[in-house]
Image (tube, rainbow, N blue to C red; front, side, top):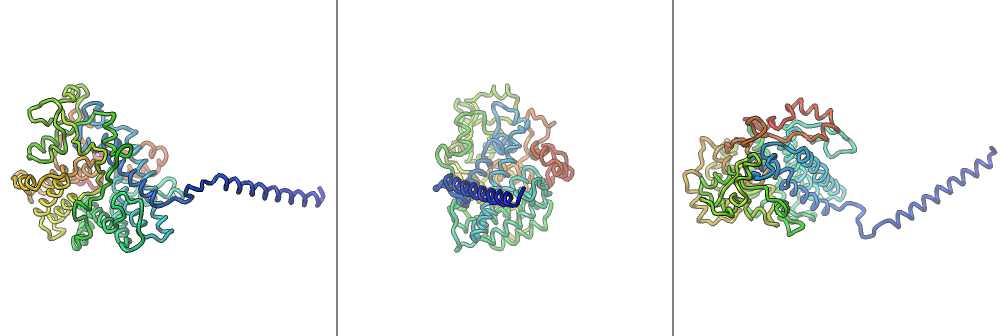
Length: 481
């Protein structure tokens, strides 16, 4: 072949490439939607991820079919297998997948967009919610991917961090987020929790730090005390009223509360006998809020269902002779609570009892109960009467029982947090499911999803070797007793 042909073909090839490139550019221009954002917007990502996480903590997978049954807030009157601790592989996989692929992925992107735009408040809020998500995950599973998580370009198969390291890391992350917040700086949008109130976001961050500090108090009291001491020195850093509660308030259908949506087609849940018996024993004014009266007349008007009954035994109780969940919780606009004022006060009461602070544990305990009752619109007269009962009085000699029993009630229908605190405090002392499949034991965690076993096998096996058998009954690090 002569040189002229080579030159001609080279020129022709370059010209063709240029022509095709120009065509591609034209096609890309034609196919662009002028009304669609090319770069993800932090406000849309933030709103979507908040809604996603709220749906998870109230939804079927992480709450209705698992934690809310395990902690005996609800019970099942039909399809009772989950109430007997026969955990659904699908439920377990969905919790893991949805937290990692939806909430955490979007919160991480919000942080990065905040960094790129120089908006420290998007960075801070993204980090707070990312930390909250990891806290929920480690509470449920134990050791989890944390330090290498949501970094798919670097770590396709992330390692599992030990639960202690996750909690300690989250304490540092939340401290960083709180310090980042600039209340007079750039505003944020897409905030479905506080509507852009950055002072309240700072309070949520520090209240999460308080929660985690108490979570590790039995296993790492030195770290716990250091965090609590810092926070107690400046109470304005914490959620300080029911107006500060971190929550998402839902809208009417189709954006309603997941429990409300579930009730449109299902009627297989009832209030647990454990809850109704305790409320009746204490003459608790929240009874009429937590449960509805039975449709048919019954001696006390409220009848709970024993957890873990066989299907035929549950059915014999009767749909009209057992108490459904109270209307407050099934209303379309009922909120998903992330962290409440009463929880903060219970944590401060416990911190005082542990001598982490100089606070008055008994007074803080009463304030915590008051905050819970006020959260549910109980009258001041009924609050005074309730607190005056000897059965409600604080017992410093067995503070875990006093705080555990009342916190369990205050966290009603907050399945994930109630389940974590019940495991930590060991109160109230519940009985395992009547026909449970765990040989008279309670589930103490969720097992790892089968997808991890298949796709991240090496790291999954390392986690099991560190934590213990991948069973529902394996105790997590924070669960000391």
